[in-house]
Image (tube, rainbow, N blue to C red; front, side, top):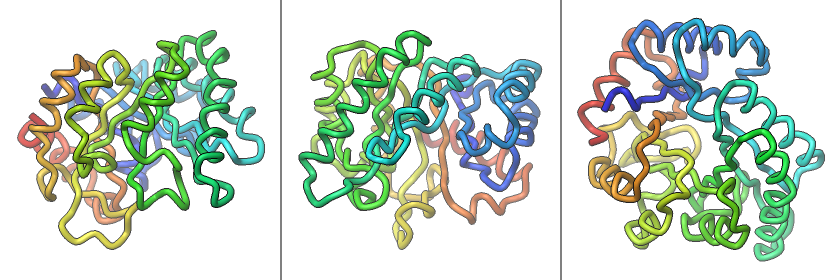
Length: 263
């Protein structure tokens, strides 16, 4: 299964994108998932040149979204163009928090923003992957908090260019997970793995290395496989303790844990 491993650049956020590219090539990882703040440091053209030279493929670009923010439409169109320029067909959408206490209105704003972006994405051959985030992140990052809600939007829009990105950290807790992953068949744009640590005090920056927490990753991956998703699997770990690991230790551990814990 290692051939499906993609190294998300946030797993080594202290490194430049160029360093991540080199490390992936050195450790036989065939896929990379850049974030846009690192892409901006290197430049899209230079990033594509280095990725191609290293023999890598881009699993996704993160992120578009934040649809209620000023200038969101322009920025999201740019994100689509960057994804296409990198050669990936997947843009991860972190949809943004509600601007008011009206959650129904907030989710309507998100859906309308996706619909506005969709023609541009289709034109560039990029799928929009709605990533539901854990409910604890509703105030700062996203008003889309369950896989069911993300699928509701994708189904209402009714275009194959809109799907979902499923991250174990954000969705493993959901009692409806088996039914919703099955419902997502044909709509899974990406799959992210990490772990939920027993003692978590920082909801954004304490994701664990696979196998260090409480998520049943083999069972989760079995649901994803049963839904027909056979694409790259991104290791995405936002955690300063992980970022501080020496380069060799981080890359070696990522590969070992992926092989041992994900399936």
